[in-house]
Each structure stands twice: as structure tokens, then as C-alpha cells.
Image 1 (cartoon, rainbow, N blue to C red):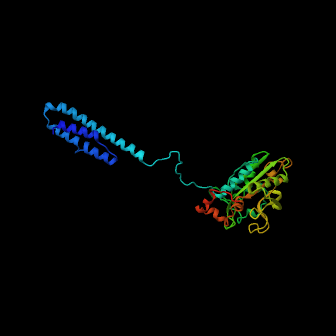
Image 2: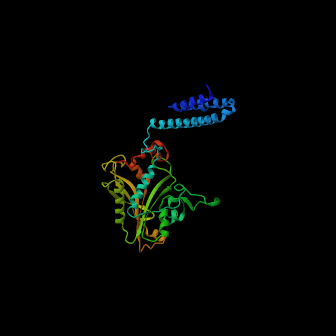
Image 3: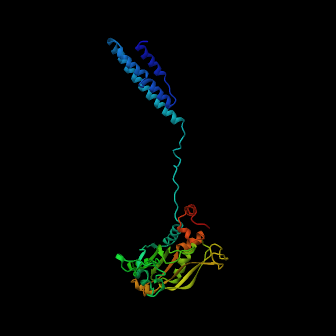
Length: 350
């Protein structure tokens, strides 16, 4: 068979070539265009052709090579389109797969709920340093120099710069220190809450921890009364625990308020009928409160003859315990993922 006849035969073969898979496309390429392929062999044989035949035959062979390359590209593209058409169908409107999301810590959930309740009735949020001086943490709040809270047994004192004495610095024992800073730098009317961490030198147990969270509130203006205080706390209790909840105030003592009171709430677990949580009394303590002592107003540069105010403070962990009924306070700080994941879907249980 002459070279011209072989070219014609390969042209016919190219026209009939088919491939259904990528492997068959590769086999076609090797058979036609590979190192030992049919087209390559023709060009090797071309070297022996007479000079007078080379021009016409060379043009025909170059065209054959171009046809083989074009056919290869067609087969390759055809296999790709077939794979897309016959492969798994993808719904482009379906949501993508996402990694599991984390959840807020239960204490964070409760703190945000408390802040939200007071924010909706006009309270701003104030923050302050956790390492406080004696004036803001004790002195301005009417703590006497010999008050037990100043003892090493109750307070974490902090050494000052370059090893100086830490007698004047301590980790704050309450967020009332933030209220002092607000009163010193603002003019009434003042309506603010101070959420944050506080520290007390207590043994860690199922019911106590050396670090916990408080939310304290302060309202100072002309004509503020104890009735305003009770109404505010009643609104908070009903917003937090339900409209059926009642509160009562018992006389108490705090250095920075006068008169002072402890606030009890009708037990939301037993409905006031008595259970182990409320010690079968029907009431649970939730916070302390009182009218701001005139001496505290004076210490902060506010005239007690013109202005009056009330303050209150609650432990976030205490509120969280009443909501979640966690048996051991230490579970909040162990970072056990199995425990924390329970608060993803339903932050509040009835």
C-alpha cells in the first residue's frame, strides 16, 4: 500500500473514531499521535519518498496530522460533556455543608438576657477595671477601714508596679466600683447597669467560686423613691421568670445603701408550694438592693439634698442556677463540651 493510500485509510479511520471514556480517548491519542502511532510512522516513512512526490504527499500528511489532533480534541471534549450529563446531579440551590457551630456559654446567655431587660427600660451599660483601688472598691462606698471585706481572707490584693505594696489595689469584689466611677464622671439623671466579673477569696465548692459574675444597677435623679426601686425589680423578675412571679423585700444591711433590703422571688420551680430549691419556704433570694446612702452620693460629688437614687446587685450564676438547675456550680467552668452543647437550642427551660 502506497503512502497516499495509507493517508486516505487513516482519514477514513479518523472520521469513524469514537470514544466513550477518558481511557478510550487516551488510547486514540496513542494509536494516532503517540511516538509509535500511525501518523508518526507515516512521517518516518516520508523520508524515503522520491523528491518529486514529497510536495503533494507532504501537504496531505500535514493535513492528516491536523485532522488527527482536531479529532482528539473533539473526542476529549465529548467525553467531558458526557461525564457531566451522566454524573451525579447537583442542586445548586441547596444550602452548603457547614461545620458545627459553637454555642454561647450559659452564663453569657443569662447575662445578655439580664442586660436586655434593663436596656429596654432605659439603662445604659457601664464597664470598669477589674483591678481597682481602695477608694473605688471600698472607700467611696462607705466601707469602714476595719470592715471585714478589706481583710486578706475576703479579698485578693494585687501588688503594685515594681513590687510596691498592694494594700491599695485589689481585684474588685463587686461591680459597685463601676457605679462610683460613673457617678464621679457623670451628672444626674444616671440610669446604668454594670455587668462584669468579680473576685472574692472563697473556697471553691458546688455552691461557691472565687470568681463569679454580677450585674449591678444604679438610678440617680430627683425624687427617686423606694417605690421606684420595688417597681423596677418587680418588672425584672416578671420579665426574667414569668408574669406569675412575685417578689418580696426583707430588711438588710449594706454599707452603701440605706435603707437596704434582700429581694426574694416566689420559687419558679415549685410555684411557691415548697421544694428543695427554696428549702420548702416557697421563696428564693435573688439579689440585694437599697436606696443609695447620702454619704455615697457626697463621696461621688452628687448633692444628696437635691438627688436621691437606688442601687441593686445580683449574681449571674445565682440567676442561672434558678433557670438551668445545674446541681454543681463548678460545671460552668470545666469547659466540658458535652455540658455546654446542651445550651445551643433552648437557652431557657420552663
